[in-house]
Length: 122
Ligand SMILES: [Zn+2]
Image 1 (cartoon, rainbow, N blue to C red):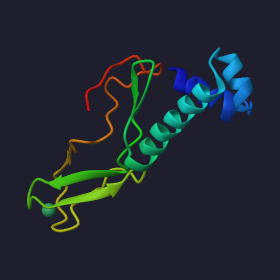
Image 2: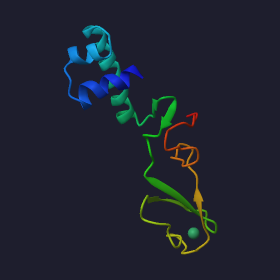
Image 3: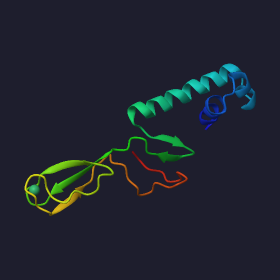
């Protein structure tokens, strides 16, 4: 949590490191170390698409923008971008017997609380 605080003070509020350190009642080098650590985690979360844990809650960062559908008739599987709506028919055989295929690493709404209270194993 001190890592979040260091980011908030330094990057969000625009304090210099000494002010941030005073605020958190740590030495300037310690503040610097916390900040580096925090930025490393944020950078990794953005780059690797991993989840950042804040207050024990899990915020999904690596949301998969694709939804998979499968045709029940010809078993063809294809992907549709989020926000484009459910496809009406199979692009292969035009069958309307479609079902959604769940990705293992797919963003899930279950347990995604507004306050991030839910613990989710990844
Ligand atoms: Zn089909």
